[in-house]
Image (cartoon, rainbow, N blue to C red; front, side, top):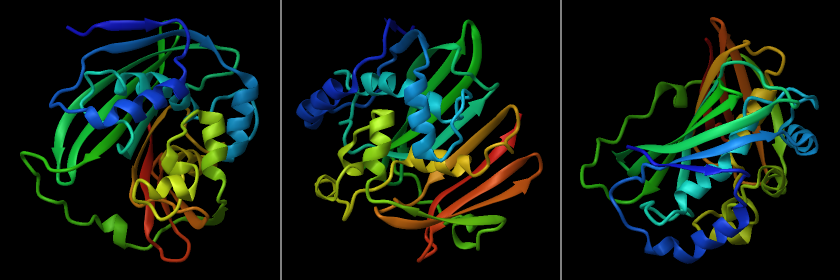
Amino acid sequence: MSTVKQFSSSPSLLPMYARAALNGPLRRGDSLPDTVYSLAAQAVDGQRLAAYQQVCGFRVGDELPPTYLHVLAFPLSVALMVQPSFPFPLVGLVHVANSITVLRSVRAGEQVSFTVQLADLRPHHAGRQLDVLADAFVQDELVWSGRSTYLRRGKSETTPERPKQAPADRSEPVGTMSQLRVPENIGRRYAAVSGDRNPIHLHALTARAFGFPKAIAHGMWLKARTLAALEGRLPEAFSVDVAFKTPVLLPSGITIATAPEGAGWTLDVRNARSGKPHLIGAVRAL
């Protein structure tokens, strides 16, 4: 049976990052802690919301973008992944996919509570994967849920066959396309509004320590910026699933392609010069 740990306020990210840097290399294990972290209802900070909307390309208003509740749940996710029983170092985990379900829109005047837990540690051809599951509530109503899939690179005792490249990775993008220049400082700007200060996103120097030639854009910034291109055209209730394919090196140019598919949309983000895929996904009406 899971243990529930309750927080009256959101845990601070900076001390947790410091703890991860000091204790991360010592992590070893083959199972996930079954603790559920719960955050009591919190008011939405309107100033922080407006800053987030501006950084991610949304219109400034009192409706929360579909990705914003991920930002509010993120400190609980980090708190789970820095507890001693978590089997991997936090720094070095790769965010490879993200799924969000929006059951209804949330306004800035509402108070939101969260639960977050870990699930499904499994083998992967490049190591092992796990999911971080988050739910958001207004009073007792479930209004939003998210699943973030992380990869820990390394050997696995049972290694699945490496999947063949999906056709979506090779075909030409379809639909309405727009080009966007992603500036060198977008990682620091997004970190300021999200609290996610992973060193791979901040500066080229800190990114090189983890094997990247330059700083890379946050995956959740890229997802948010892609959904901002569809603002005003998304269904009232929907799910949006994306896979992060290759990192966006900063600075960079990207092409965002969106195409209607039934009551939803396909999403395809590529490097503007090489055509390499950065993000593929779909929006589906519920």
